Image (cartoon, rainbow, N blue to C red; front, side):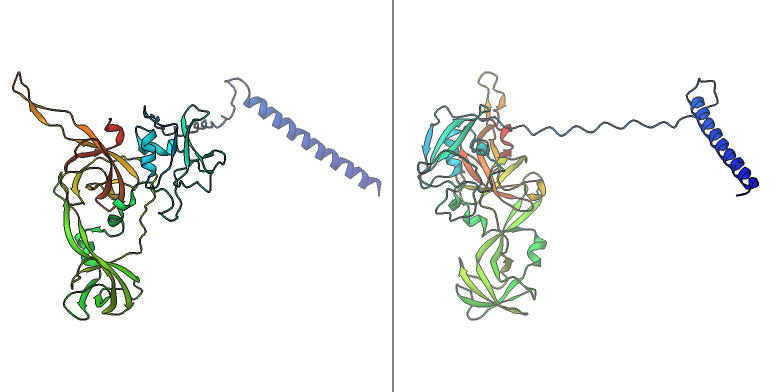
Length: 385
């Protein structure tokens, strides 16, 4: 390399180093000016809004306190005909709180079923709360859960007396007038004037991919809201069960079982819905009225079925327990002769088991005094003993 080139390279390197030194000095000066006194012409630092504090987690829902009956047993042997409700009623003042007593545990993937002959022992947990535990055929005590898996009803103890509600679970329907009009219907019988068991008939309005089994219903009783006069729905009178044999218009069906004679104009309601019969009770939240009795009686007692004017649209759900408030009588004050209304008093408990759009069916689980159509149903904590 020539001396001239060597000299040129050295000068260029010095120039680059000098520029870098000036750049570093300028950056340091700018930093110092930004951190200087208020009189300096520093560029304002953009403000950053403080982060909002995280919302606190929702408070856990309060758990109802268990109140044991004064005469509760320490051990109980399960008998045939018992129900989970009746067993809990031996231990608790409020048997609908049995999930607390029976130690519901979501980590138990295979909850124990309760059978006649099992022995239930009352113990106290580490938290000081009473618990029921199960002793079966001499094995160690194990935790109980009120959840009941599907199995033969003749074997396991049911939650409530299913015989009292069976006819109103799968053989009942309550629909609006528009829903009734939209259903398929019986067109004509095959032979004769009426349709009985194992007789063929014809229907219209069935889709080409129609269901195979239908309940045959006849529009019957209308339910009116006593507070507003509004039509809440019209119940169907159960006629029987029919099976589709041949699709078409008209379609051919066979009446497999008839509870009463069928006629042209009866409606066909698909029976592909499954309704729960295994209930883990919870405190209901709706307020309403008893508007009818399903058993054809006027006095309402234990294990009778009632209709309340609240349904799915009002938030009612199967398994909810409601207190019944009997309307207080009006009496005359013996001194002033003034009319005085006595307080409404709790007359029992009902468990909702079948929910329609605007009404629900409920079973009377406890009756401490006579109940009547027009009595109020309220959350159980609003109807104290």
